[in-house]
Each structure stands twice: as C-alpha cells, then as structure tokens.
Length: 168
Image (cartoon, rainbow, N blue to C red; front, top):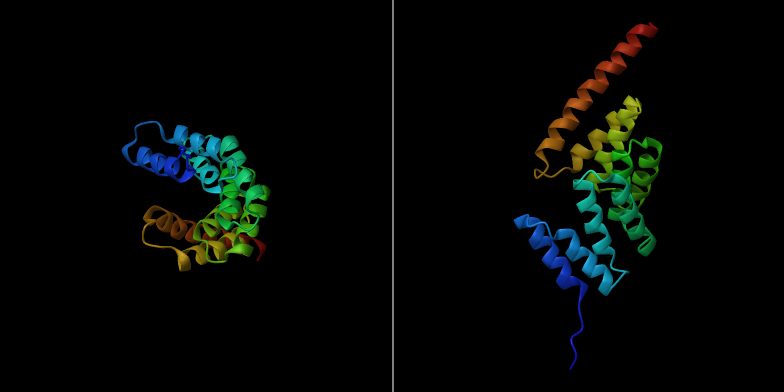
C-alpha cells in the first residue's frame, strides 16, 4: 500500500500555520496544489494569503484560477472582487461582485466589496443600497466592517444631500 498525498492534509496544515503565524502557510497551500492543481480551496486560500499581504496582483491571479476551476463558486468571484478593489480597479470589482451575487445573493463579503467599489467610484446612491444589503446579511463576527459600512452610509447620505442642495 503506497502513500497517496491528499491536498486536504496540506490545507489543514496551512490553516494551522495561519493560526500560529509560523510563516509556512503559503508553502502548505503550494503543496496542496502540487498534489492537486485543481484544488479550488487551495487557490482560494492562497488568494486570502496574498490579499492579507496586500499582494493584490497575486491574490487576483489565485482567485481567477479558482473561478476557472469552479465557474459557479461565488466565493471565488468575490475573491476576484476583493483583489480588484485592492488594485483600485473599481469597474472590474463591480463585475466580479455582481457575478458573485448572481450566484449567492447572501454573500456578505461580495456586498461589502461592491459597496466599497461604488463608494470609491463616487456612485453614492448605489453604495448606500449595497452597504445596507451588507448590513442585513452581516454577522457579528465582522464588527469593523459593520462600523465602516454605517459610517459610509452616513457619508453617502451627506454627499447626496449636499449634491441635491447644490442643484436646488
């Protein structure tokens, strides 16, 4: 009976490495991809690793690989949106987030990223709607994003009211 490596083993090691911050996280995800280059979860974890490192080009590449492997994976499309937002490619971000939300309209990360892209591209009315959708779906495990969404809603309202006052 010969040893058959399993990518799940390396994914678990990668998560353990992330938790203890020993610096080997990405290496384990690379091992998982050596064992199975079609392991979508490994590509998504590498995306998160690079996203956390602010290496948005690499993060986008990894998320795109995940979308190529699983076209119906909303998390993969949302990952593309996250990375594109980091690159300040707002129209591209919106494209990815819309696709993610078509696949899973309850995906809070896609609503938040979409709202940020709309806000940064000065589409305040759309951002207001998207931030509200995020807040409807947001879990309490995202307190910073909840606070920021509420602040951005107020800023968007103020900007829209200021615009309306200037027109009148």
